[in-house]
Structures are given as structure tokens and as C-alpha cells.
Image (cartoon, rainbow, N blue to C red; front, side, top):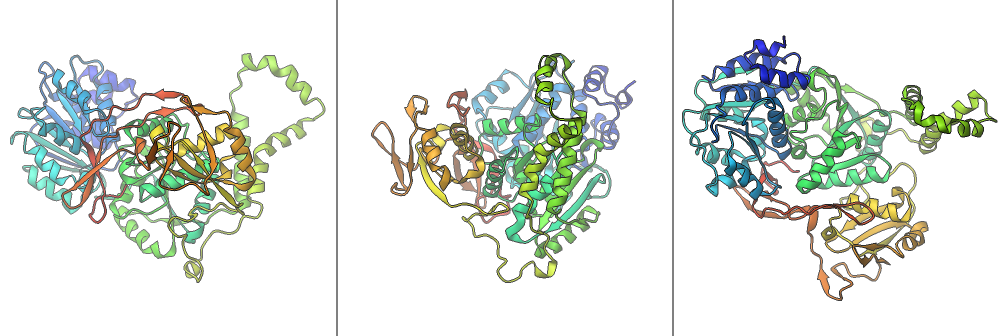
Length: 623
């Protein structure tokens, strides 16, 4: 018998979660579920990310509600779209053997009309981000007068993102006798205040010591000079060939720049941040879950709620502004009892912050050394050997090619064949790292004269080795054609057959783009686009020297200014202290690099979106 049955969970739910691989409850589930099933207490649960909090409150919700009735009985509030979708999908999986269970996800960046239609058809469980939920309440499109249970998931993060006012307004529409369940990874004073404000004598459950980190995570830090940060980051990645990681940055701009630099350097990487439309976010997350991406470059806000199995590394390219957020970041790895590594790349002035984090998480960091070029080459070589040794051979399909393969290798003995296969990858890294410098910064010399970080707007991510001179070119495609900078990079490489390393800065505008290429490939780029059309109009490549920055003349003869639009979304006015609220995106379809449309443009919703982004001087997270 599945141990979940002993906790009081009905058989049809137990059968569903057994199929999902739930064999034994986690500590938070084992202790929280019996308490919540009683339905008689407000509840505060403090546990780290990755410990199974969704099932801890989701299974009791499914047990306690009356699904014969089609009105809202449970409201689950969470900070981000990704977490909202994750909770909704989990509840649907848990209840797949039950009848008439209606769960609606309410979040910004998606069509509000679709969400309103789902609510109108009847719903028992609403999973929502505060901004979009408040929008729907203000439209008087939902009635929470009979809600019995309110769950505040990731409460600390909702407060950090500036949702206090929204939560107050939402909960004011719910009955006084409802039960409130609050789950959080950390317990700062703000969360303590919200518990006191909304709860009566809650049952408190703390798994481990408050605010401590997951015991299965190893924490490491590397001290580097500011100018060497990106090169050191790549060394760490190359030294871990099987890495499947999330890289955290402080701002959206830094996130996008690092992702683009990694793509140019041949890594499977992409960015996730608040300026992406929902379709773009979904595309990136699907690629990451499918492991088509090896590295996800993300801001704190965008990464909340990402529940992807087997993340091996979390890399803090920039340390978070608030110490508590390190716990959330590192919690993306070592989920469900597995192990993981959390890495911080810092300069010597940030050592004090590392010591602060150590006190918060109750664990010491290990000071690690950036590997040298020889170490990286050796690690990559044996990773290739291991991969060849363990590859699955499709005997039926490859059998027809064996005679030709054997004929090709007839003049080589076994040892020579092995050397050549190993050299395929080894030679590339050997050449790249042949003159690799030592990137480890001695603490005393970190800020020596002349060792200043690259200026904003310059080449912030120099490659190891020399860079050639670049020529700036113009192309008559831009963001209104649904291109991101990553899409444009791929489009140029695909049509010209040049390497991403030959492309410099990409300056994406509304209806056109400026991009840099190395001088020796300019003619190749121009030739590559000579007969290319995009949706029926000719693609033009021109030298950018004489072209004005303000706008471009399109083929229809009309003059169009610099319209920033498309996938970046529209951001509305500020409220409550200067924080901006993200509006639903008005664009965001994708095309493959042949120019053919791969999915339709989002309809947009024209309303205030599901969560706030920082607008500047307040405490809300920059994303």
C-alpha cells in the first residue's frame, strides 16, 4: 500500500500520484497533510524549495472540496506565471481519476478573455498571480464569497515583489471564516506580519532550521577579476561537461547579453526574463525541460516556480541583492532528495556577502579555483570517451552502413581510430585553451590599478584570445517581425553559414536591426542575403555607416520611426511606490529561420498583467 493512503488520501488520488512516481511522502508532506486534512486550523509551513510543498497543500485541497458544486472554493496565490502553471498542472495530474474537478490558472501575459471564459464555465480551484487576480476581481468577474481555503505559496517572494497591497485587496473579498495556509521557504519579518494579520492561532510547521539551505547542496565560490568574469564562467561550464544548470543574473539586460554571448560561443543557452512574452517564455521553458538547452540564464523573478528535474548546478553570475534570495536560487537544484552544486562567481569585495549568506543558510562555502586550460581539456576528453563508451547502438539502422564505414577505416588500426575519435572534440578545446591564462584573482590584487570592470555598453563579455575588427551592417528586419536578438543571431548564421563567433553586437530596433560582423566575413554576409526574402519582401543588407539611427525606409516607401514593439511587450504606468506593472504582451510569435511562421501571434489582453517588475528606486526585484 502506498504510504499516502495512511495519511488519509483517497484511493483515486493515491493511484494518480503513484503513477507520477510518488512512493513515499516527503517530510513536509508527511507532517502537513494530516493537519490540513482536519480543515480546522490556519497553517504556516516553512520548508525549502524542492521539498514537495505543492503536494503538501494540493492533496488536502482536493480532499476537502465539494466538486459537485461549481463555484470557487479554494484560491491559491503564487508570485509568478511559471509557478502558477506548475501548480495548476500538478493539481490536474493529482485529480485525473476524479470527476468534475475544474482548476483555472489566472496569470498575466496570457489572454484574459480566455481566463474569464473558463471562470464563467465553473471552477472550484483558482490558481493565480496577484496582479491578474486583482484585475479580474475589479471587473467583478468572480465571486469569492464562498471560498473556504486560501493558500499563499512562496509568500516571502510575493512580498519581496511588492504584492502586499494586491494581497490585501484580494483577501478582503474572501470570507472571514476561511482557512488560510501560508507556505514559505524563508520567514522574514514581513512574512511573520502577514501571518499575524490574516491568521488566527495558526499551526506552525518548520522543516529544518528557519531560512537554512538544503543539506544536499554543495556551495562553492570563485574569486575573479571583473574583466575575467565571463571567461571564468565559461571555464567552469567547460569543466563540467554534463552540466544542466540555471545561471542567475541581477538584471534583464545582463541576462540577455550573457545568453547571446554564450550562443555565439557555441553553447546551448537561452534567456528567461520579464520582457519576454508568454509564448517566448513557454518556448524557452519547453526547450529547457526537453534538455535542448544546457544553460538557462534567468533573473530571480523569472526563475521562481521553475521546477525542472535533475538540475545539476546553479550558478550565481551576480549575487542577489537580498541575502534570502540565495536560498531560493540554490533551491532550484538538489530537488526531491537529489544532490546539486551552487556556485557564486565573485570579486574580493563580495567576500563579506558570502559570509552573510553562510550565516543565513547555516552552511560554509568552499573556495574553489578556476580550472586551468589543461584541466578543462582533460575533463572534456574523458567526458567524450565516457559518452562513446555508453552510447546506445541502433543495430538495425546502422547495419546497412557498416561495410562503408569499415572500408573508410580499412587503413587504420584500432588504436589509430580511437585516437582520431577522441581528437574530434579534444583538438577544439586544446586549441582554444592552449594559451589560457590563470583567471584566479588573489584577494589582495583583485582591485589593482588598471583592473576595472568593462564599462556599460562596451564589450562586457570578451572571449579568451584576440578579437578581430568589426563592420556594422544594417538589415531591414526587427522586433515587429517577431525577432528577438537570439532569433536574429540564428537567422544571420543560418543564411550566411558563418559562425556565431564572427558576429558582434546586435542592436535590435522596431523595423530594422544593426549588427556587427568581423571584417573578413562582410562580403559573405552580403552574398548570403542576396536572394533571401522574408514573408514576401526582400531582405536588405547594407553598410550602416551612412544610415541614420532614427528610422528606416521600408519597401513600401513610407518612413517608419524606431518603434520598439513585438516580443518585448508593453509596460504600463507605475503605482504604489514607483514599481512598474508588466502588461500582457501584444506580440511574440515565432518563425523558424527560413522566415516561415511557426506559431500565431498572441492576441494580447490589453490589461494590467500578472506581476510587477521593478521600476527603479523601490525594493521590488529587478528582473
